[in-house]
Image (tube, rainbow, N blue to C red; front, side, top):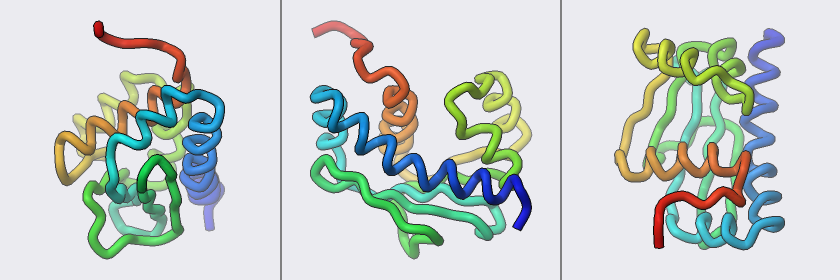
Length: 133
């Protein structure tokens, strides 16, 4: 297994713990996690590395591997690209470039994809309030 594959696998593993940790620290983030119940898959295109996340009544669990029928599926062309795109300090232009070059994509419900990706971004700074009441 390459260094990039190990790094990507560790990032995917840590995501579950980071989501649950932030939910324990920030009540508003815990409330957000209770909004949706679904399964999200993140994997390389060749499915050599993958992890799926189940959101259920505010708790997030995950398992290594490929889920048989996830609600949404996020793919990256390789572990190297995944390791670069799934870190908090990622350059957003690099993400956009990867999408334009079909190296990063998503399938499934647009609503769930947006909710999932926004939740991951919000996890980095859960106290920020968006929008108006």
